[in-house]
Image 1 (cartoon, one colour):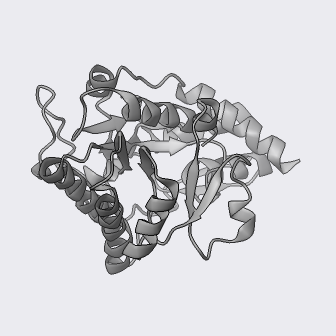
Image 2: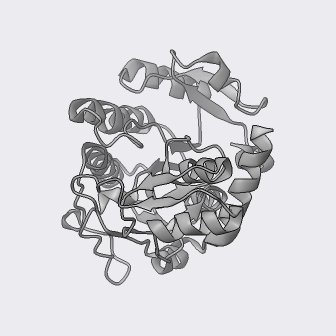
Length: 296
């Protein structure tokens, strides 16, 4: 939102009716609030009519950090909520609707698109309810583009990290342990991930919203470079000179753990002219400094 504000946009944020006031208060002061319950089609319709947007970023989701999320709830919120939004936007004159998916839609297949063509549904292989519901949301976005001409683009961020991330996720949890001098129990950490700094993700989303002629496309937002989870944690330990121990193997892998997820960064660059700019070392240092400042 801060990036949109810097660009001079009029910004409306959909706020869940039961959202704690202190969380909504974190939004930049120039952002207008509109009540939004994605499970309620009428609520979505009223929000769209109130904001009258010409550009939409759809990030509402449940289960992002909860692999055990109830499948029915994930379907209702993530896919059903997307349908409600797309239906509300269908007859409006809108420049673009950017749906935010996840790299986990690829699962173990992660077969890249061939010759710049759209990734087919058989190239997606979700391994949990959250990822499956996001595949469904992508499919409906694709359908609304084909059937109704709605200018939908889907972006799939890879392993996002940076300031403001929930403390239970990998990078902030490791940083907290490192700064506190505590041991850090983790899986063996052999999973390869494409770690992308949050500011790069924001710039990628902005590029996807503005690039011409990409309606109906799905774009990876990642660096194209893989690091193992253990390598990322070891870098945190080196940067902070942590005294605790990395207890690799203390935890088991999640059921169905995908061992290799790396973005097709070249295809994204060809389509929208964007590449990630912040390397892992620099991004981790920025995140560590910000977490240290916030704890003071």
